[in-house]
Image 1: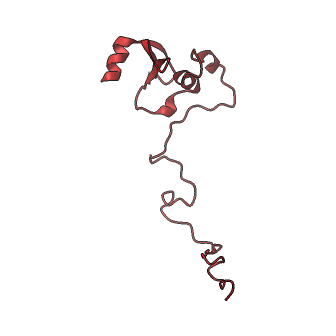
Image 2: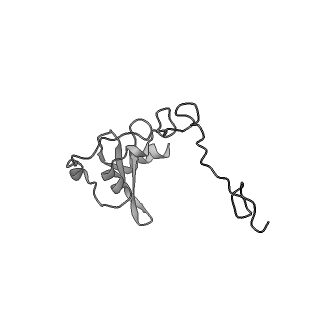
Image 3: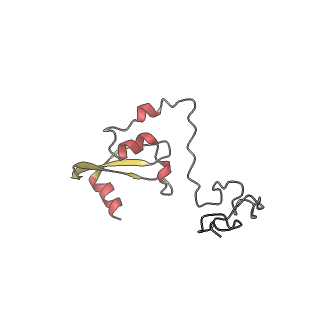
Length: 127
């Protein structure tokens, strides 16, 4: 509620990004010597939806958003993909218990360690 009130009455819209997120800056008042900056997400709150040029502005790395530089995307840059951690579509490497619902068979290359200084199958030194 406080964010909505301060956004409506005490801020100015700085810009929007390609995802529809809106970026604001406080009209007056500073916190720790810097003006307050924040984002209102379109859709769910997901920090990975903030492009790098706006991230730099939000964190006071640059004074102005780097929106002109964002238009000069390199040919090797890929489109944004959301963070899927914690969802059904999350990445799970082969052997992960949730990937195929079974564990990979044991390979037999495991050798247990014992606190006596050797492997569990070896007799302890000095015996």
